[in-house]
Length: 334
Image (cartoon, rainbow, N blue to C red; front, side):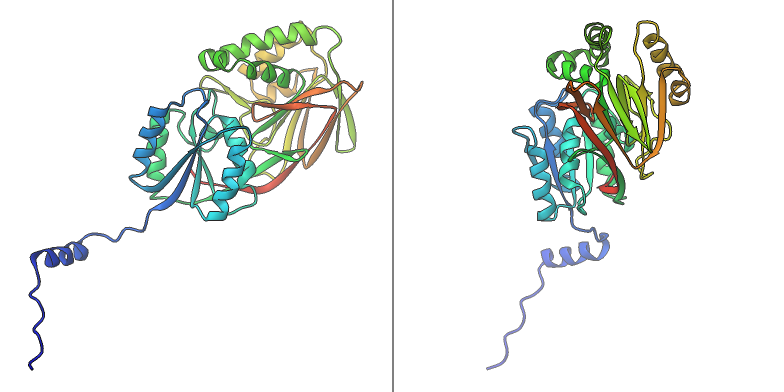
């Protein structure tokens, strides 16, 4: 019996062959996990859905809402184990901090979408502070996907991405965190008003004092700001720089110790922060700058507990905190 002749090639088969021969080969989509803080200042369900839909044009996207504190850390550890190509923190700096704590030491890079009131880490990576522009930026990132690494600060057992603080700085953050609706509505102006009120109530009379131990020296003060990156924060679009020599790839920390705070000195310090930056701040008589630090220790002078903030979130009250740096511990892409 003669062999059966092959079926004639259909027009569809020929069209598919033609398309494969002329269309450029595109790599498979990278897996992206978007971790969403649904309570962040500018995040809504509709916005989240639109952003995820847009990102699906270039990535294989999964999106998960956080349910409680530290949930983003847990999700990031799972994402690293499951081999995601990138994790995107869609929220404020607190969400980014939790994500960084989950990805530290792994090979899974972190990126960000601005969903908070300030978004310091997001902007420090060069990602626009407008969520639509930032989404477009992440879409373009698919064609230039080049992960790198940045330093992380560490305070006791927790990482921070750009800044830590005790004293007036942390007291203001603590108060602001208690009123998230006002924080979202008034943003930096609410921080300013809270700072003035907190200073008057807690730092005019018998302010809590701390001792900073660094480089074999001891310095007494009422407020300490430690930077692992630059800037310290933003006032609207204006970067606020406090510590000299801060950077996220230096392998060191920079700090500024406010030795005394009175109604006469604080206004002049604020003016230097806004007008002159860290060089001007460091020359103030009541500010002691510290640079090129690998570690430092801050201890309560009288046993009173003091508030600690990391990346703009109040994380508790302590009587001492040990700070250090982990060089290039966090993979990022932007």
